[in-house]
Image (cartoon, rainbow, N blue to C red; front, side, top):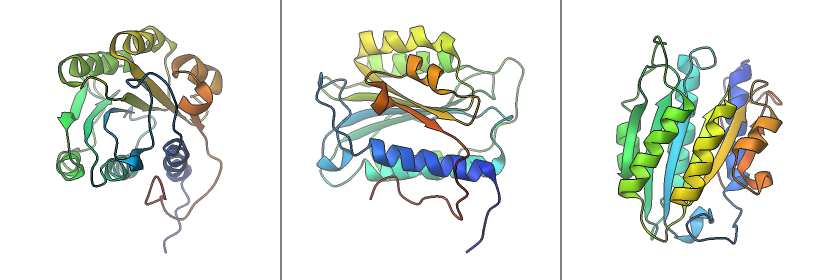
Length: 222
């Protein structure tokens, strides 16, 4: 087993662990806003937004992110479930990169599209979280199913409070639950709590350089 002395490795490992804990929570609420246990065969419209700013993501970290995203898709696609996925990368290129267009409905199709994603070099005027959320709004308007939970998960090292208004609109207009995974010291808990859907103890996940682990967690739930 190769030992990785890399702070970012443990950051993304802890993202997987945090999501594993989250995915075992069932919240009783409006059915379009409740994120139910993915292993119970229920449907979900899931949007995954990844900040790929080069200051915080290297080529190796991109590989770790892709592994985590694929694990999410695998766990949300057991026999009898009907997920719809969308994956968007922002923060490097001038436009939001739609990596997995919504609605992609199987983990195998998810993987085929995600495997094509390459590392993006920084461009002038990179896209923002607000722009990515606008893409989610548009995709959900045309593709989200009625009476199905709608969830957006944001992975970012630099959270922008300006996104708060866009998140509240998604909650109000699309029945969206927004989970914020803040990575490292630039994504502090106060901002997480203002951006994430309520209850924030379920939907705000601060991740820091807390542990050094040998390998990235292979599963987000067990």
